[in-house]
Structures are given as structure tokens and as C-alpha cells.
Image 1: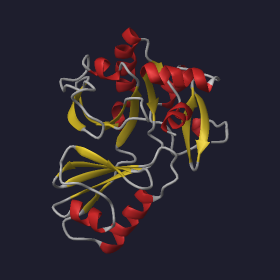
Image 2: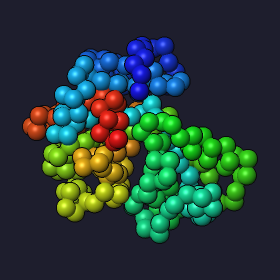
Image 3: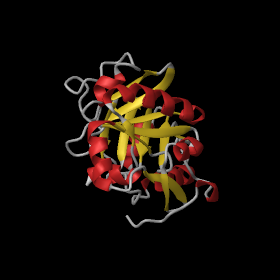
Length: 237
């Protein structure tokens, strides 16, 4: 990805808690019509090494959406998406988007990390045009923040914040936990970046600053630090 230096205040779509990211030393780049915290370290190899140990990145500017209702899963499957029968599990699509089945009646759609797929936009448009019965669009772009926690110590760190057993041996890649994290509701989706353990965290966007601080505090014991979007994309290659 080319470097496009940018100021968060110049974009309507930006991290919900960008002042905290600025205070942590984030370097921002434009990403389509949004801006994202691209790095915290000028050396990409150093930041990738940090992410492999324990890293925290904000992916909130990336597209995401959701659908709910008795026919939501069937409707999504009819569009050609691959969705299994198991709740609290996620499936990677051919365009690298991730479909998370939260229940028999609800699914969450996360963009590919490079934001090349337009699946979220297409599904929203198709749903609005077709108005399928018992399948309703659940906007996620503004209501849900999106963090990712990576690294070999991630599962141990989560034990300090969450009652769900997220040890790598028990919580396999693809698994979903709908749980309380740092005393707030959150969705945790394990989807590894190659051999690096990785957990997507979705939660109320109004609490972005709070959960960022709580995660940083919990990570400090394991030398965890914020990392940028560029390092996440590099590890995902």
C-alpha cells in the first residue's frame, strides 16, 4: 500500500478515538475515503515483530455491516456466500471478507483487510432493493468499533479482561465469543494472520477510547503495544 500521509480531521470516516491514537504516536494514511492509523513505528519489520508478540490495532475505518432476521442466513447464502450451520463461527470468503454467524438469525460481515472487496456495500444495496422478508440490514459502520489484537500472548492477556476461555488450544481460529470484556459487551472473532494468532474485537463505538485504554493496560504485562494497519496487512499476506 502506498504511503498517503493524512490528518484524521480531514476525513469524515476516521477512527472513533483518533485523539488517543495521535497521543500514542500514530502515523495516519488515507485509505479510500477514510483515514487509518497506519503505523506507530517507521520500521515495518519492527512493528510486525511487535504484532507477533502482542499488538493492538484499530481497524474501525474498514467496511463492515450486518443482517438480522429469521431469513438473514438464508438470504446471505442465496447471494453466493459460504456460511455453515454452526453459530458462533466465522467463514472466510473467496474475496477475503469474513462472515461471522452470530446466531440462527444474525450475521456480521467484515471487510477484507486490504479493503479491496465491495461486498459490504453490495449487500447493503441488494438488501435495500430487494427488501427480503425477515432479513433486515443492521448498520455496523458507525455503531460498532473494530479492533484487532494479535500475537502469541493475546490469549493469555484476554484472561485478564474476559471470562471466556480464549486459550489458543481451546478457542480455535474461526471461533466467536459474544461476551463481556472489561465490563462491556463485545464480540471476539479469532481469525489468525498466517501463523500469528489474531482476534477481531467488535463493540460499541462510543466506548472505543475506554477499551483501547483497558487493552493497553492489560497488554503491558506482556510488552504489548499499539501497532499500525500496515503491519497487520503485512502479516496477513
